[in-house]
Image 1 (tube, rainbow over the protein chains, first blue to last red):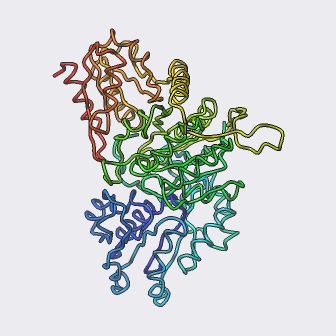
Image 2: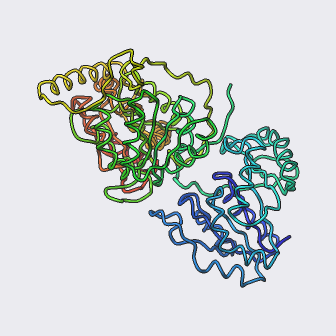
Image 3: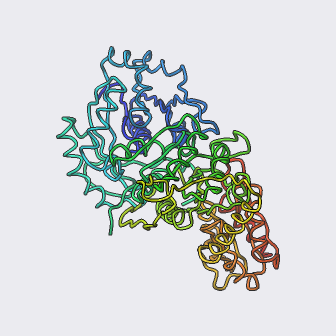
Length: 216
Length: 352
């Protein structure tokens, strides 16, 4: 396992949910963990929505004070540099969506490449219309790599239909993600399932608290 | 059954517009509707359409006027402050009798306000929003699926009546993700003999214009336009009724608040309170007859809104003030909780 794990991908692919759960998983496995929110695209659905559970579990959160606030102010705190100074702590980096989100990573590219102890995972969801085919995933992968200046190293299959996801929906994504893997030459790192669905060899994730409350 | 995809409300609007034959989109980014433009920027080049990020909201709405005049389907989208900027252009579209779809994914106001969801542009939207005597048809979706279906309906209505149709959504509707099917869309085909398509030297030039040199001619145009509005009010009003058969208390809400209200109503019913809901889907024309139908049966109405009480006036007018209408509201980007609505239902119903 590498010290730094980056989660990148298409807008709305589930990067934040995956990143938070991955950080929790690392912590439960006994590693010191910090999670950093580098999203400069979307002011909603931020890592900060999970602050309570992160605090409870003793995971440090680096996040802009404007995240999940009433202003849309793209910002990354200076504290972000501590991720690269403190090499004893494992870091999970939640990057904004698409190539536009990945540009933020360019600021830290030199440190990441110099240390050379990172994984950069592409989070994909078969049920998102702009990544519904392997060809579209390849397109997004190349756009993200160009913007970030960092090569991706693996794929996270986060195929889901939100609250109504069934076991079959997840199973139906396997041939798709296999094809994405073949076309990109990237290994499939894991497939996620939401809590309540049981499939062997998957990573169970608990969803973040609902941003807008009981509106469903 | 069609293919299910997981979409944000903003994306569903954009995809539905493309499927409805809208090949021209002009916009300017503003939270919380930016994904409409972002999605269009990805999809339009692939389907041979035009995505253009204008230099401002005002520029974008004037580009809409240009395309609408040629008879092509065209859309723009923004959020509250941006819609105010588009007000002049919307009035010109109305004055020129041009069809277009304008999306408002509302945020908190007034002024710059904030980026959290709101329904405070109800008055602005249902009363026209710009200057002069005119109406827009206003559609209020309450799910991501409706963001898509009402966008398609919006284009059809716009063409049918040569009017601006506004999709009045809010930050939650724009941002939330839900499974949605956008298939089997058959856009209404409307002949547009008035459009500026070139005479080919075979006919007299068409003129699209909102300036009248003689006041009596402008008056006649306005009178004629209002005859059209009367017809629309009679035929196009839409509302959903939820548990209204035996309801003694009627909750009313549109868009996102109707979903929160539904949760409160379920709980109230479980506690034995006879409560139902009217959800207007068209905010203009306001579905007055649906309210009037229940005005004698219900002892009270509760208008749940994310503003300081705007739709409540239309409800009072619709039931001709026969029964009291109470406001249950949050504003400034706050969303009411089901418990708050339940408490109001109990208070109005005299339940301890």
